[in-house]
Amino acid sequence: MTDVCIVGAGVAGGLVANELAGRGYDVVILEAGERFSRANRLPRMEDALRPSDPGNNVWGMGGGRDAYTSSGEFDYPLNETRVKGVGGTTLHWLGITPRLHEKDFEMNTRYGLADDWPIGYETLRPYYVEAERQLGVAGARDNPFAPPRETDFPMDAFPQSHSDSLFERACEELDIQTHTVPQARNSEVYDGRSPCVGYSTCIPVCPSGAKYSGDVHIRKAEANGARVIDQAPVQRLEHDDAGESITAAVYTTATGERSRMTARHFVIAAGAVETARLLLLSESERYPNGLANSSGAVGRYFMEHPGIEASGLVDEPPNPNPIGFHTTETHQFYDHETAFPGSLKLEFKNANPHSLPDMALRGGDGSLREDVLDVATGDAWGDELVGILQEAGKEKTRLAVLASAEQLPLWENTVSLDHSKTDDLGNPVPDVSFSVGERARRTLEYAEGILRDIMSELGATEVSVDSAHDPRHASHHMGTTRMGTDPDASVVDRRLRTHDLSNLTIASGSVFVTAGAMNPTLTIAALSLKAAEHIAADL
Image 1 (cartoon, rainbow, N blue to C red):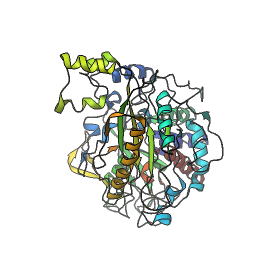
Image 2: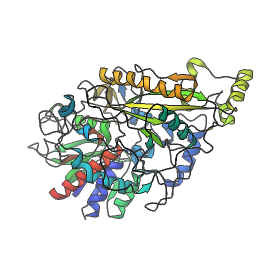
Image 3: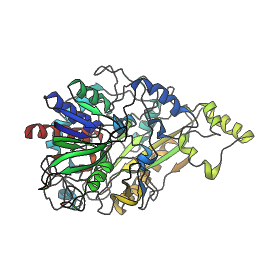
Image 4: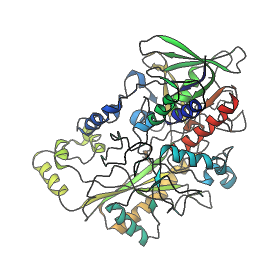
């Protein structure tokens, strides 16, 4: 028997494992995916740059292991950005790391909406500091809309790009204040990793390791004595006769054999979808509706960050060097005195010059996103393609700004089991039933006016704005095992331990009560550090 068994080797699992192994506890991590060789990251980047690349397949997602269904308002693209493997989805993420604002923890108290978290910003504040230090966050204290902070960022912010300066001038005329973006990407040598060298392929892969990913803390945990078993998807959790504590995690090995891991304490750190699915798969006579689900809230309140983008052409050269991440945002439209509109975060995209040979190979397309439409619209060839390339070679560029909106938790947005379809091990696949909700849609309609004003001030032509009725999704999976003080309405308590089982902790975005409009990873990291502290106190 080990001290702690952790399910999932992403950022949450890695942080918890490192904290506990560093304190001398015996820790085993079970990871459904494989351990990717760091030496293969450059070839993965090269695969991602090929016109024939199908997207996230550079990390082996898809097939029977990752099968799912979608039954809601939208055909939800679950596998679009998630990664199963040592490092988890942070192998693929953009690396943006803002904190949630104070109001995000107090939505009911302030606006009479949703529920308050059982903890406030001040409770999480010291863990935010530690999370920024451990991940390595580059940033500046130039955001007048940010929640209070106590120290400078571990690294200086990345410099402004050429397109940033264009947005800044336009926003000044509109009385919109822009600022830098905190991100877990090295702007200098940090924690033994190089500064960013500008490959511009942050999604789907950073070849240099300058961008933080969860395998950083997995390696640290291993150096402290933790053990990792990869290609070991957990099938179910077993509990004692009284149904008060977990006794074992049942998993399948890489050779197809079933095995059991016993431990004093268990941690699920598998993300909002797979965490809920594992609890539902672990049904028993004591818990017929799924483990830790006496409240019925497991799988409920699934949240995302819907967004719309505006883009247009300006008579300016593009950024002289590729920049795979944005360096300017505004949070001016985030905190409101009234319940409507909801919070908005504006991200000013860094425009990169398109490779003309690459566009030619893609039939005139300037981005992977256009390839999705080729079935309906086709590619351009011959004289039409020559015209597109001649136009692309002129001194103008397409600028874009994204508005990311707050979505309220909705009971009907769920992750459930689809018993009509099974994965490669014979288990029901997760079904995602998702709708945006009326308030988020109205917030995006409000954002559309702001985006059009910015494009107008830029003097942009050929302006295109997404519809608030068909928004993009950030693949920020939150909710499904919410935190709360009432066992009848929540899954985990303020210590991240389940109400029903005394030795089961959940470290994941699944515990979020509300979503705000900020990228969730830094908050997941802060909560994971908090959870590790409580587990150590209990062991």
